[in-house]
Image (cartoon, rainbow, N blue to C red; front, top):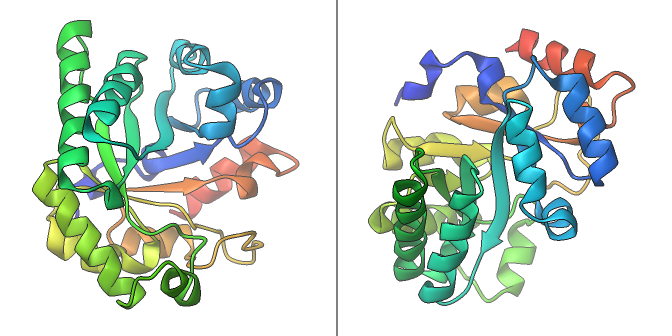
Length: 241
């Protein structure tokens, strides 16, 4: 199935992961301003600096993927999604294993914040299985299904909950695109340019492979942020796409 995101320029579908401290994050943002569209703020950067980091990136013109992976009772997650959406985040995440009710509560909180603050609701994304996990690690958690089947089960629950899409390995993106339809967000970490170090990722693909498999957006961190010239590294990846 063809993704409706194919109409969006490839460079606007690359999310740069700022897995670093605030000074380095601002330095990278300054180097990538006018080139990259998206920045990912994860737990380390957000917990150290709070919503101020989201405000600062938004002021620089970036869209912000706030990757905090909510996982709690529905009431708490609704409040967390409300706060995240209120900060101006353009994407936010939760764990699909929290269940349909929890994911639906996150959607409710995000929509309520958007209505009250007068801006678009963020894309709400369910984490399926972390891209650092392999089959053996999944089995150790008590899941007897194969990795690909577990991802599908969780993605189907995300669809039932009415959220925008999922976060999954590029290896599973093609199957998920068929299940979720052309307009769903399928955001894929575990993306590495050919020849790059895998780092702590287990299920990886190149940027071109991820998009060919149906990803709406790809997340890339170290191949850009740890490059000698991050702007040139970003442009090289964008040109390849």
